[in-house]
Amino acid sequence: MPSDEHKLVVFYDGSCPFCTFSATRLKKLDWMNNLQIYDLYTPEVLQKYHIPYEEAILRIQVINKKQERKEGLEALLEISKFIPSLCFFLPIFWLTIKLGLGTKIYDWIARNRFLFPVPGYCPIPDDKGK
Image (cartoon, rainbow, N blue to C red; front, side):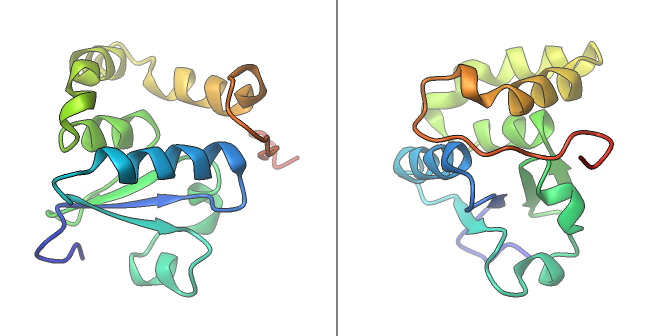
């Protein structure tokens, strides 16, 4: 249920330095105030938007004005539509998704966040819940 002034609701893992850094950057880039960004640990926010915790902890989640939930690279595609400085990535994200590689690439990056020069690291569970 995005509010009237926000076109997209974004959920990130506030316990993860990589995710928190990314969410902070998104807030700075959202100069048109199109995004409502929530830490997934905000009390009852996942329940309000009907997002399973198990999915939210693995991949970024968004809810658009049509009440559709997108995750992972599809969520990043949605976010890029509202952030002018990220529009460059739209065709790359779209093509990657259409080729069936979007989830694989997103999950690889999520599992290997420590390779990226962002302060902090948080382990996320693998596909087997470990």
